[in-house]
Amino acid sequence: MSKFVFTWRTVLFVPGIVIILAGWPAPALATQTHGQPEGLMVHQLAHIFFIVSMGILEFWLRKRNLVREKGWRLIQLSAILFLLWNLDAIAVHFLDEQINLLQIEAMDIWRLRITVADDFTGLGVLYYLAKFDHLLCVPAMFSLFYGLRTLHREARATEYSGDG
Image (cartoon, rainbow, N blue to C red; front, side, top):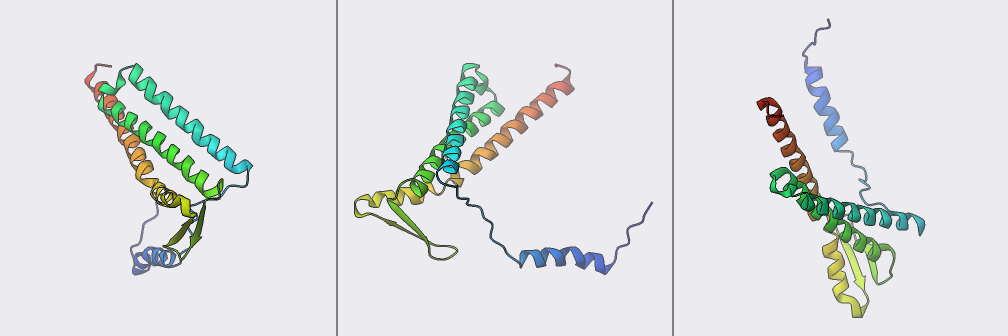
C-alpha cells in the first residue's frame, strides 16, 4: 500500500494549476451557428420534436392523474418550461438566421447592437427578451432534477418500509 505524503509541493500544486487555468481564458463557444440551410432546418426540426415530446408527456401525466404526486408535478412543470423554451429557441433561431429584419453586431464581449428596420422597432425588444431563454431552460432542468429525485426518494422509502 502506498502512503500519501503531505508536502507543501502538493498543497500548492493543485491550487496553482487551477489559478493558471482560470487566468488563461478561452472562448466558451456557447453559441453555435448552423450550416445553411440544412443544419438550421434539422436543428429547428429537433426543437419541434422536443415540443411534441413535452406535449405528449404533459398529456400523459394529466391523463394518468399522476400530477397529484409532488415528483410528477415537478416533472410536469419541467415539461411545460421545456416546451416554452423550445418555442422561444425556434423564434430566436428564426429571427437570427432566417429573416433579415434584424442586424446583430457585437460591440464587445458584453454588448450587442440590435438594429431593426423602422417599421419593426418592437421586434428588437422581442428579440432581446427572447435571448433570455436560460430563464426558462435552467428552471426546467432543476424541476426535472428535483422531480426525479423526489420520485426516487419516495420509491426508496416505500421499498424500505416493506410496502413494495
